Length: 258
Image 1 (cartoon, rainbow, N blue to C red):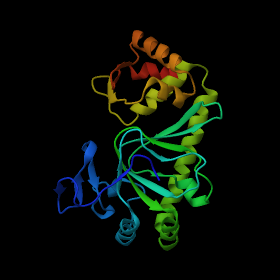
Image 2 (tube, one colour):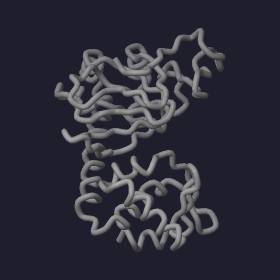
Image 3 (cartoon, rainbow, N blue to C red):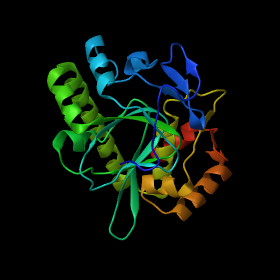
């Protein structure tokens, strides 16, 4: 069972719009039903025909998790999938000597634990919550039956498995083929800023990861990340102030990454 989880009932919080979307601990706006999700059209797995979404809602259990909770652990037998409705989850792998590598930070809309649930093999990664999150659970048995009954949902799952594969290849390319820590960090910051528009020649975004977590993503040490960020700040390439990341010269970062 995931650590730190909390199921949500209709009696908790303050009800909004007919009781489907509710306020809950950690300031989250809980979506109790896939049918009432305001992001259905924007998300790969949620954008299904009404009959499929209704069936999905019937087999889904809504739950909220605090920062630091664990959804599943590398090597654990797959119990099912988690649909990430809000918040962020880091997916990582560890070696026997305790070293960790973060493969990616999952965003809302992703289905976590998908490869293991489909294949029946153990979870290949550990999923840790890094900010208050709603992640709705579907058991493996219910999920596989759902895919057999709804071909379009199975196609969406295949698409997401393809995206996971391409993400893993990109991560391997960054770690294995980059020539320096500066190049790795520049690529990482550019990936973060890809979905943010520039304003007056600069990019601002929220970065909640620690230096240690950034190091685990790009395959280097915390000390190297701290030193390289200091160099970027001196060269006016990027500056981190608390959780606010400022990139005043995106073109210069692209030159380093190239």
